[in-house]
Image 1 (cartoon, rainbow over the protein chains, first blue to last red):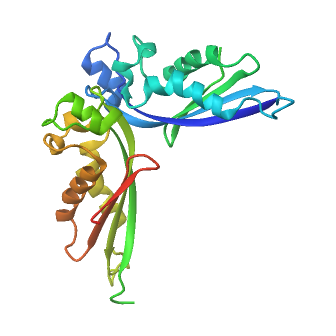
Image 2 (cartoon, each protein chain N blue to C red):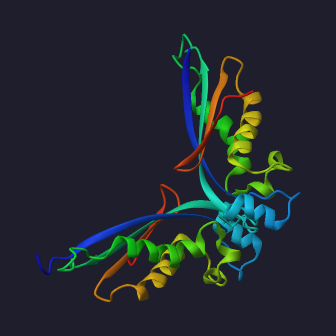
Image 3 (cartoon, one colour):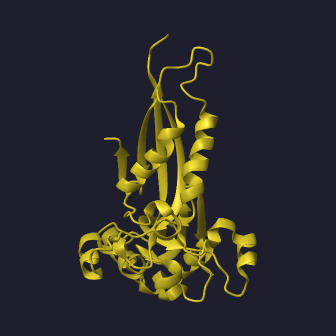
Length: 136
Length: 138
């Protein structure tokens, strides 16, 4: 079993704002992250899959293929967009990095070939803040 | 050791949303020129800012400039304005100015320049992404 990681990136706007709370409560919990007009990040996305190297190619999965799957199902839905406004799979959710990494996993997993499994997704919001999700 | 000029640098960062949009053009023309950078609901970046101050080290302190003073100045003049803000909507500096990295660097220079010793040179490098950055003055 070998783990294969592909790194991608996207730029997006978001805000942390719970619509069930008052503006004051949002500001007290989320501080500047609750800024009504949003702020933004350069997100770095690490997708790790696991599997056995193919006998003929030596690949767990052609990494170009993995990149195309991530691009089609994740980056095209997130890049240069507003997570709170533009992303169907984040509607009704708090746009924290934690919730975003879970949503990315759920979007991506069904589109991977059966011979590999999704192992981990690591998502950097800034160079010093990141989350990891291993499914379930 | 006198009369030798040295450059000192301070790195800071801020996170902001923006979109590239020329109000004199229609949406189609904006999309044609700026592409996804013009998306109406904004996107965002982790901006990395490098401030370079060049001058002769002070005879008494050995400093070109006290870095704590420079850091406080950047905090007050730049980060308080731009960090966790929407550059198009929240900052008066970009009310009538397209917030490209080029323009942001010029605005930062113009905010800091009057606060520094006239004997010192100022140079701004601004990273919009790890791969795209601008410098001013050029």
